[in-house]
Length: 375
Image 1 (cartoon, rainbow, N blue to C red):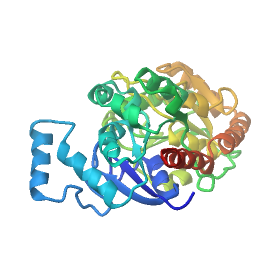
Image 2: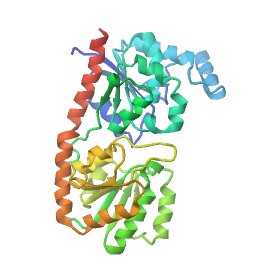
Image 3: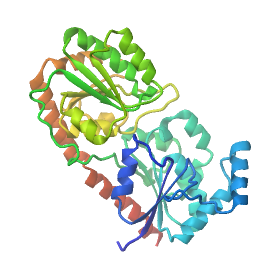
Image 4: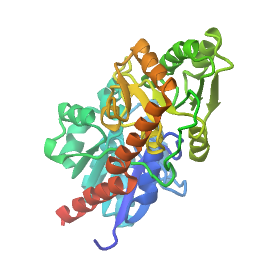
C-alpha cells in the first residue's frame, strides 16, 4: 500500500508495563501520529492540547471534572479537527474504552477505526459498565476489533461485538531481545515479572515459593515490578521468613530483566480472575520468558492457556491452587533436565506462534485493509 497516515490513540503517555503498545508505535507501518491522555485523547505527541482555545479547555474541564460527563462535544470536535488537519487515514485505538470514546469523532471525520482490546477493557466489570453505553456505536462503526486471546474473543461477542469484525492477534515477542538461554547449569531459582495487582496474585507466588523453599532451601525467587500489593507482598515475605530467599527488585528495564533470566531456570506467574472480573489478555512477560528458554509455571488463565502448552513448555495449574503451583515448581527445581527440555520447547513455541514480526504484520494487514475497504 502507498504511504498512509496512522493515528495511534492510547491512554498513557508512558507506562512501563505497556510494552505491547510501544511495539505498535515503533513497528507498525505508516506515518504515525500518537495521541494520549486517558480514555479520550487530550494531548498530541508534543504534549500540546487538542483543544486549542482557552474557552474550549475551560468548557471541557467543567464538563469532565464537575459534571463527570463522558460524551463531551468540545473534545469530540477537537479530535475531529485533528484527524482532518493531519489527513489521518485510519485510527488505532489502544483499549476498548478509547475506541468507545473516539468512535463518534472518527465517524464525523469518515476515518476508519480499529479498536484493539488488551485485558481489563474486556473483563473488568466496572470499566465495562462505565463504557457499555458507548460500545454499540463503537462496534457498529469500527472496521475491525482486535482481541489477544480466545477468552477475550468470547467476552467481546457477549458484549455485542460482531464476530465478523473480531480478529484474534496475540502479542508478539522480539526474539532478538530475548534469545535462547542455556539453563542447563542453573540453580533452583525462579523469576516473576509483573505489576503487583490482584489479577497477578503475587501473594500466591510467595506462598507457593514458601513450600518450594522448605524442600529446596537454596532456592531463590526474584519478583520484578511495582504496584498496590507490593507492600503486602513485602510483609508476607517477612512473615514467612523468606527475606534472604526472595528479592523484590522494583521496576526494571527489559535489558535488566533479560540479565535476570540468565540466573534462573523457571518463570512463575499466578494470574487469576480478580473479584471485579479483571483478567489478563496474554501476558508479554510470559512470552518473553518462554522466548528466552525458561520453563513456565502459571495458571490456566486467559491467553496463558495458549502461550503455555501444559506438560510441554511448562505447567498450568488451576487459579488459586497454591499447592498445585508449589508442586510443579518443586518438580522444576528438582529436575534440571526437565526444565531445560521444557525451556527449549517453550522457545520453539514462541518462535512459531508469537514472533513479533508475524504479529505486527497481521495487525498491519488489519489496519491497511480498513483503509482499502473504506475506499
